[in-house]
Length: 81
Image 1: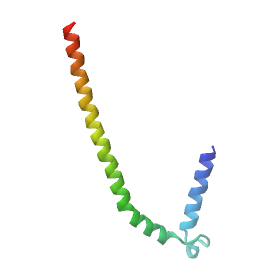
Image 2 (image 1 turned 180 degrees about the vertical axis):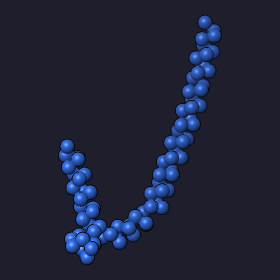
Image 3 (image 1 turned 180 degrees about the horizontal axis):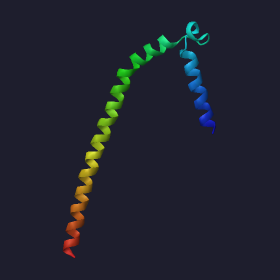
Image 4 (image 1 turned 90 degrees about the horizontal axis):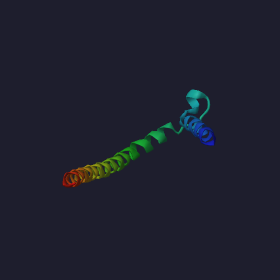
């Protein structure tokens, strides 16, 4: 419940900070600064997400290879009995 309230407060602050006082009559007018930050941060964030996706893909390939090897061992041990 506390997390929900904090989340709502933070979203309300974000909207308040982005609104221009000229247009809405209130707000901090940080909209241009927020967009500048997002434009600068987006390539770095995209690279970070891409690296994580590569690591997850490699781990998935290793898991599939290991599962296939375990299947083959299970079949071989089942045939010996």
